[in-house]
Image (tube, rainbow, N blue to C red; front, side, top):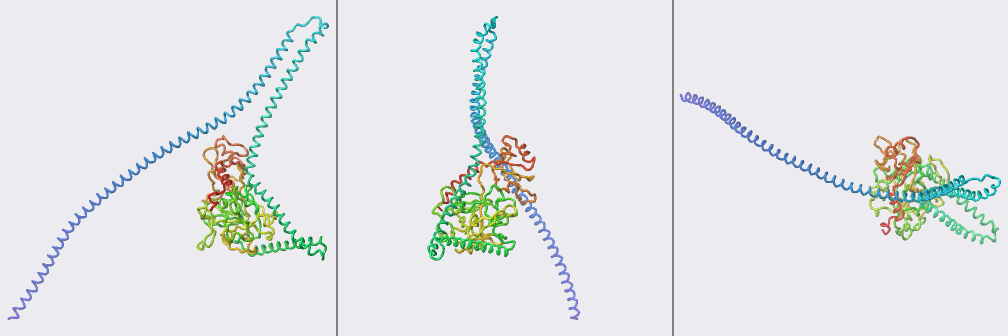
Length: 616
């Protein structure tokens, strides 16, 4: 009975617990759904409010940005207008001043010409009036003779008539002679006036040519004097040992034969040394490959343009400071690389037809400083100060015409390459000339195309470039760069193919002429007259700059003025007509006039040198 009561009780308790759990689960789920819905409604309301606030804030910031941009645009417009108005006012003032100056200059020139023409016209009118007066007098006398009556008895009156006509014949002949003399004098005066004008034009042209040849004549005179003095010194130097040898051998041999034998031995010794030098150069040329400097032996290449001229070693100190030069190592030419950083060399003289701006250097004088390396054997004796006449002297620095920076020696991180990176003049490396000795023999003079023309002594035109502060010389490396290498006092350490340099300089002038045979000249000229060179155009459309025929001469500079075309002056000719004259036929001869401002600067630089660096 107890078990029967316990069993239903447990069954009912289990069922009650199951119903309770199910009701609790449903209640919890309903509560969760209700809470989720309530929180979702609250979240959506908060998110909508946040989005509204953010959009409002963004609209405020966007409005501020728009206002700021509008304000900035208005400010830029106002500034541009103010600047344009100020520049326009300055331009009008300058143009008015330029027009006034030009008008005054033209007025002055016209006034001078007017006074000359007026004086000539007065003289001409005076002579014409004299001629007219004499003609009127002659006509009046002829009219009076015709109106005079004649007597009936001509035979009786003929003596008296001849007596009366004789006095009138004399004035007539005198008047004719005076007229002829006046006409002759007038013609002579006109011829003399034309001769004077032509003579003045010739004198002006000769004056310009003499100014351009002044630098050449200076160092040429110095070269001749140096040669004569060195010849006398060598003659005196050789005479002393000959006299000593003659006195010592007078008891053994004929005294007249000993000097001759000594001369023969000396000539033979010199020939042997020259042959050894040539043999050494030939051997080294055979060992070198295509990438090494100056393969094929020593040579001196002539300039590629007639505007450049080789300078002998004796004329190097007389070059004007600031001259434009090219430094040649046989067929190789020093230049600045494409990045404008390193000093490199390239085989150029035997395979190219002109120069580029990267090859040109300005050579500037420097003060000479005493050092241990300055007194080594074979180096020029330095002066205590720089020359006062604007000449180069023995110490110089190199400045690139392409980058306008100076040549310096690189350090260990630059692999001791020569750099073109110094911006200040006082940071530039100072060099000096060391002429080659006579034992180097002769070098072949090569014309354009690599054809030999002549042979000259190596000591006449070749030299080594040495640092003024130490015993290091400039040398060409096989990888195309340049470096400074230490050299002892002996001449055996000087490698001729990589250390022997020659120099050519740009001859100064006030006007010059080039002949262009190509279709394109390669010049960019100004849009107004006169036609002034403002740049150089490339001959290639690939983007790489290929110099044209005018740029390859190395003479045409920015600022020069085209004055003549095929000998015809284009002053006053409209610009389109002048351009058509240049492009109409080939070859064309273009005459240039050096810019007055640039020529004045070059002249001042050549005369004054670099005075700020003389006391460095």
